[in-house]
Length: 418
Ligand code: UD1
Image (tube, rainbow, N blue to C red):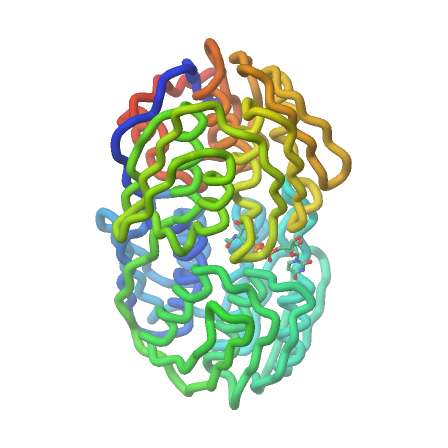
């Protein structure tokens, strides 16, 4: 077991660069299965989730080679095979191969993803969409099976703009017969990145980034080369970390248009935020003010930034309300923040955070990726030593986090225990 030790109280200052987006590379890796030709992906972050997705597509017979921050994927020998529970448990997003498998091989058998620390996260919207396109779905013995001898276009309205369902249905539709119209879809930048990659492969998709996507099926796709967009959640995490220590730093590669909701909250709290073409500068000199915050589908405030903003609010002036409207069980970090002296009351999906003058360091335990990031931020602002257990969660979604924070002046180190 590894622990991350943090000595709080050091201001973060300087410049840090964000890596490629985890949530963009995962669906794009799955999308390479749609062609028989090699694909080159650039700006690929070195993350556990990316490694596991690599294992998933290797299991399906594709060749995956990493060269620096590039990934070469040759799916020419890929074939339709089961995806085992061992992999779907380690990476929920491995369900993103369902769309490509159904599209190219007209069938899939994928183990149902296990329960997840932040909520039940069903796949009903994905499966309803596949069924509308002609697939027959069976769920048995922990596996989801689908067959679709003839996958055809359909007009599909999602009950909720699910990111994964939007991506899976886009990928199922690219090789289907006829036109698919997806309504009330997710509008995240990662969906636009997936559309751009698929279109480079020869797909005919338009509308990503808006709430209707139109896909005209084609008979075949070619290989493509693509650079992954910068990670907006990693960028947002650095902005909040700098704000938490009342520091000043430039987050290089952060795209202001992808972070509008986060920037607006930070400004409302009293941070100075300067948006440039190649990144975002943030500076905080005084104590921040509490704000209210509700997570929503993009372009609303991202649920993946909720734990970090909660950490920031623990020492702000006044009381703020955080509403988590995307996931039903995403406040594990609150109990740990309370061990550090935070004043937080939870009622269902609502957290009431009253700022205290300072947090004090304590041993805490992370249960999920963004919750771990929140505890690191709390450790950076707390007085004394914080030891974060469960740091393996950080390696799922942050590339070289300690190194990057150290370059900004943070005092932290990892320690292995028996
Ligand atoms: C993606 C992101 C994740 C982020 C989330 C919401 C990736 C790899 N992961 O996850 O980091 O937190 O978007 O922004 O991109 N739902 C259903 N039925 C479905 C599908 C979803 O009820 O068929 C519900 C989920 O339980 C959840 C909500 O919809 O409450 C949002 O889920 P979704 O947008 O699908 O998130 P993911 O794609 O899993």
